[in-house]
Length: 322
Image (cartoon, rainbow, N blue to C red; front, side, top):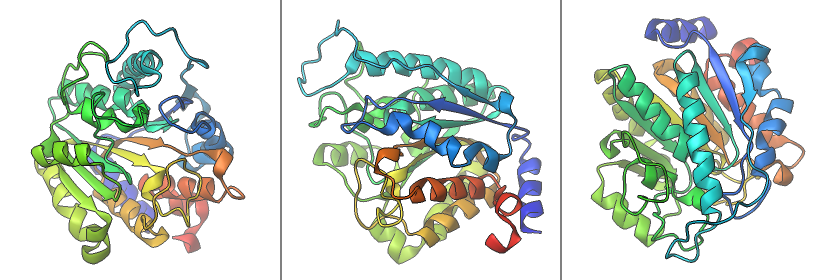
């Protein structure tokens, strides 16, 4: 009954006739290697089976395997792999836009640098449909550094600043056709914010829900007003899910773990709420590092959560599991 109700709501939304998985095995935006193996490990853990997609709805976008010659040097000497990340950003954006014209895309990384390609592509797709794009950013970090402010130089920490049109990316990253409007952005689960990011976020109109608020007010109370805005404005909703939004006690396979993240029950409630809304039109799943997984338990949890998000969980895992 639950499964039929969820699928009925999604069909009523009129957008989700099929799902297409695009694997993006890229890890050069992170400080610790291993994320590039994430897509293969998640498929082996049953991701495509859980989404019930046919073989022709899965593909892997080829990624460069090594560093490129740096033809553009950034004044911030900490910045790493700039040429590599920006070239991949262009390729991801092109393919992401193509896929989104006929299916609901699921972008499986790889590190969060891939969102510099997926977010602008989804903004373009929304504009092509005459609709606004909303973004739900599930992450321990806001990834709101610019090329000037990043201290680590790891470019998985800049995609949201880039996609929302913050200054400092011109001449390095691809020009944006349409920045994501920060007033249509909701960050949830945040608990590690650098001072420079905090200042930029304060000047934006983004909703920022730190873990303290999640624990005191609850997922539904925080997220429902945002979902109501998406529905009211007839928007497309892109969910960017970084594995480190989860507590490392239940999802240890991340390179940048931060304590006191979403619990298993909170993550399940979140995905069930999103599923019932029928609003999710695209997904990033990033920062899973199988080299750090313990007996595959992070991968197993991620497959479950994605199945819950897309309403296939009871059908795949059995009614008792719901």
